[in-house]
Amino acid sequence: MISQQLNDTITRIGPKTEAGAVLRCYWHPAALVEELESQLPIPVNLLGERLALVLDDAGDLRLVTRISAIGEPAVFYPDSTEIKIEVTGPTYPVMVKKGIAFAYLGNGEAPEFPNFDCFRADDTHVFAFKGLWECNWLQALEIGIDPAHASFLHRFLKDDDQGSNYGKQFRDKVAQTSMPMTQVLREYPRPDINVEETDYGLKITALRHMDNGQTHVRITNQIFPEAICIPMSREMTITQWHVPIDDENCYWFTLFTSFKEPVNKELMRAQRLKEHKLPTYAPLKNRENSYGYNPQEQADETYTGMGMDINVHDQWAVEGMGRIQNRTREHLGRSDKAIIRYRRILRQAIDAMGAGNRNALPMQNGEKIKTIIGPLSNDAVAPTENWSGASHQADLERRAACPWDASV
Amino acid sequence: MTQQTPIPAEEFIDAPTGWVRILDREALEIARPLIPVVLNGQRLVLFRDEEGELGLIGRNCPHRGADLCYGRLENNGLRCPFHGWHFDRTGQCVEQPAEPEGSPMYKAIKVPMTPVEERDGGIWAFLKDGDTT
Ligand SMILES: [Fe+2]
Image 1: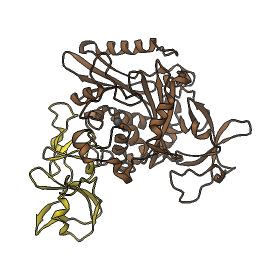
Image 2: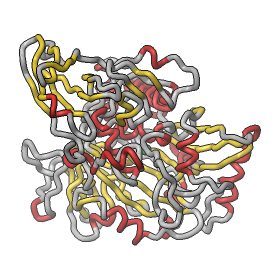
Image 3: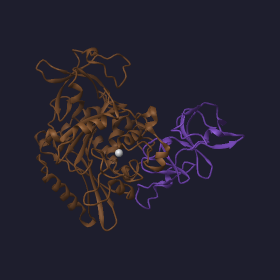
Image 4: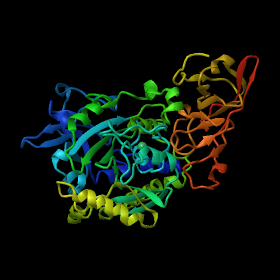
C-alpha cells in the first residue's frame, strides 16, 4: 500500500509533473512507420501533449504541436486534412528505428540509443506493432515485470500442439525439453524471483524448480523507464514500451526481434490486424464487450475465459484496475518483488531530477549508452545446481547461430 | 436455468443506510451465479458459493486491483484470475498460490464484505452510507 500522494507522483506524466520530467529524458515510440506511409501529417497524442508528426522543411520527420478542441477525446485520430498546427508551440525531434518513429520530448540534448538487440538486428529480423490499453502506463508496465502472473492469468488448461503457434507468446516448447511452456507455467506456479539492478534498469530471473533436479529459468528485463524485454519463443524476443498517451491511456509498442530466421512480417501483421481496429489500433476485445468473456471457456480451457490471445488477458488485468490503479488499497506480495524494486528506481530518478542530477538516471551517461547490448532474455531448462551458467550458455548458442551481430 | 451469459449488467442501487432488497432471488439463478452490483456508489460482486450461500464483496482484488467479477467461481469461493488469490464468501483470502509455500500472508488479506441475506424471495443487503471506502 502506498499513499494517494505517492501514487499520483509515480503515475502522472503531464508536462509539469515529476514522473513526466523523468520520462521526458528518454526517447519514446510515437507512431508506427506503417501509420505514416499512407498519410502525413498524422496525429500523435503522447505524454499528455497533443502533437502531430510532420515532415519539416529539411524533409525530416518532426513532432509539432497540434491545435486541439477543448474536450477532445484522449484517443483522437483526426484525418491529415483536419490537423491544424500550432506554429508557436513546442516541437520535438524524431528518429525512425525498426518500423517505429521515436520522439524526444525533453530538454537539452537527446540521449543516444542503447545498442539493444531490437535496434541492432537486421531490418528483416524485426517487426513492429502497437495497441491501445485504456489505463495508466505504470500498471501496464508493472504487469510486464511480474513473472508469476503467467502461471495464472495465461494458464491454458490444455496444452495444444505447437504447429500453428508462430508469432504467439508462451506457445513454444521449452528449450531442451519436450514440455510445452504452458505446462511448465501451470505446474510450477510459485517462481523464486531474483531482481538485479543493471545499467538499463532491472534484470528479473524467475526460477521454477521442477522435478528431476531441473530448473526452468526465465530471464526478463525492465528497461528504464517504461519498457520491458522478454522472450516470446525460442526464436523471438519482445521489446515493449508502455507509452503514456495521457494519465489514463497508453499504447504498447512492440519490436518483435528474431534471432536466426527473418520475421514473417506479413503473418505477424495479419494476426494482429485481426484483433485491432485502425487508425487507433484499439483492440476489438475490450471493456465494452467484456473482452469476449465466456464462462464455459473459463471452466474448461483458459483461466480467464477470454480466448487464447494473452494480450487480451493482460489488457483485461490492467484495465480492470481502473484508469489509474488505486495503490492505496493494494497488498503486494513476494511475487511483486520486481515491481517494488522498479518503483524504488523510479522514485530515485524523480529525486535525482528534483536535485538537478539527470546524469544519475539510467542510460543518461553519454557515450557509454551505446555500449549497452542485449539484454539477455531467455527461457531455458537447466540442472538446478548450475542454472545460471546453463541458462547463459543456451542464450550464447542462440546468438552464435544468428546472421546479425548478436554477440554479448 | 437460463442460458450461459457473459457478465450480467451492473445493478445500481442507491438507498439510505439499512437492509435493502437489492435483487429478486431468481436474478442469481443463472449458470454462473455472479452479478456485479453498485450499492451507494460502492462497486461490489454478488455471488453464490458451492454451499449455496451468498457472498457480497468488494469488486477489486486486494492484491493489485484486478476485477473480481471475472473471477473463477470454484472451490466454494471466488478466485482472481490474475494470480489465483482465492476468497471465500466473507471476502477472507484463503489461498495465495503464487506466494512461497507456507506463507501466512493470506490470513491478513480480506476483501471488504457487505452483509447479505435471502428472504421473502429476495436478496437483501445492509447498505452503508455512500462513501467510497
Ligand atoms: Fe502477461
